[in-house]
Amino acid sequence: MNDELFERILVPIASPEDAEATARAIRPHLDAGTTLIVTHVTRGTDAETTIKTGRDQFAGATYETFSDILYRRDLEFEWVTLEAREVTEALVDAVEMTAATVVAFTPRDMDTWKQTLAGDPGNRLIREAAVPVMVFPNQQS
Image (cartoon, rainbow, N blue to C red; front, top):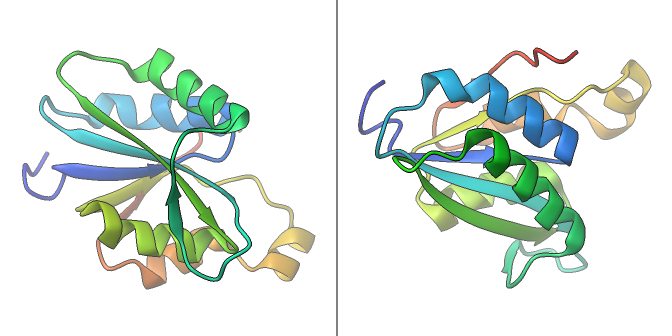
């Protein structure tokens, strides 16, 4: 892959199941020396996106699932738990806060009703992120 573009990849994961699907989807495309900024967003009360210190139990289990599948000595990992009211805004903010060069994720299963109420976070992330966004197919669906 392009060394500069794929230097620091922001990888949002929502749950252990999502972490597994995402890790399996991106694994064949990673080069040595890549930094994966693995992030999970928890519900915050403030309008600002903040990086939480420490990890809650759910985020920890989610990160563990991801690293079990994808751990390689030639990759760098950063674990970032974000606290925000809105997931897409948090991820857009995280691109700048972590100096990510690209975002990579697998789409979440959302039925039409949820998309109508919540909007489609993946599409919104693609439109609003200041860096390229790569969407990998979820092979588990």
